[in-house]
Image (cartoon, rainbow, N blue to C red; front, side):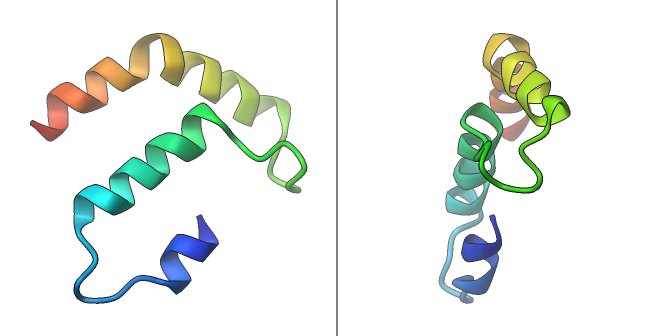
Length: 59
């Protein structure tokens, strides 16, 4: 996520950034200090219910 923010330019599309966030939610880096149980639970929720909700909102 930090890498995406550091590489952000005015030409970067918002959809690319949002896809990166969705990937982070589905596949969190468990080796990261932020890879806690809450991250794993959020990934499970997003994979089961959240992705459809967010996709519907973005359209």
